[in-house]
Length: 294
Image (cartoon, rainbow, N blue to C red; front, side, top):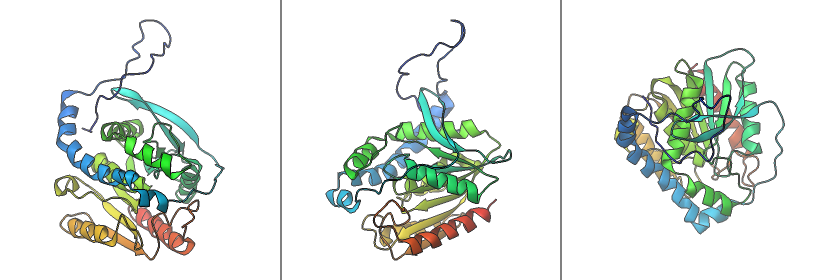
C-alpha cells in the first residue's frame, strides 16, 4: 500500500467515447489515507528543510545561471494518472527489450529540463536493459534562473510530490524493480522515492541532497544507498553527511558515502561550478553501485 493523497480537482474532464464513460481519477481509499497520515509529517519535515533554501539569498547567489542545454536523443514525454488529482508528467526512455527494471530520475531544482533529459538518455545507454523514467515534481514548470528555481522548489507540496511518486510506482507495476537517482532538490527526493517504493526499491543514489533524518521513516527504507556529497557545500554540509552516516549505521541497509573536494552542483555540466574530475568518478561509482544490485 502506498502513500497517496487527494490534492486538487481536475482542471477539466475529457470526454472519451460515450457519455457513460467514467473519466474521474480514482480516489485514495481509507487504508492509503492511513499510511499517508503515518509518514507525511516525517517526509514533509525533511523535504521542506531543503526547500527553505529557496529563501536564502546566499543559496540563490551560489547558483549561477545555468549554461544552455539542448535535448538530443531518444525518449518522449508521457503522462500518467494520479489518484485524486491531475495527471503527472514524466520523460521516459524505454529499454531496447522488455524489462521490469526501472530507474526513476528526479530533477534538480531547475525542473525537468533538457539537461535532465540528456542525463536520462545517458543512463539508458549505460543500462540498456533498464527503463528510465524521469519524474516531474514541478508539474511542467522549468526554470532557467535561480530566482524562479527557488520559487518552484518552495511551491512543491509534499502531498502532491508523494502522489506523483506513488502513481509512478502504479504506472510501472508491482513486478518492477525500482532504482532511484537525483541531484540537489532531486537528491533528497531520490531517497524519499526509494522509501516510498517499499520492497520494490533496489538501490537509491542521491547527489548532494537533503538526507532523511527521522529514524522511524528511515527504518522503512528497504534498499542500500549511495550518497554523494560535496565537501565545499555550504548547505548539505559535511556535518549533514556525517549525521546521515551515523543514522544509516543503525539500520540494516548499507550506506556508501562518497565525498568530493567540490562545490554543490559539481556533477552538472550546465553548472558553472561543474567539476569534471569529481563528476566522472561520482558517476563511475553510481554505475558500479547500481550494477551490483541488479
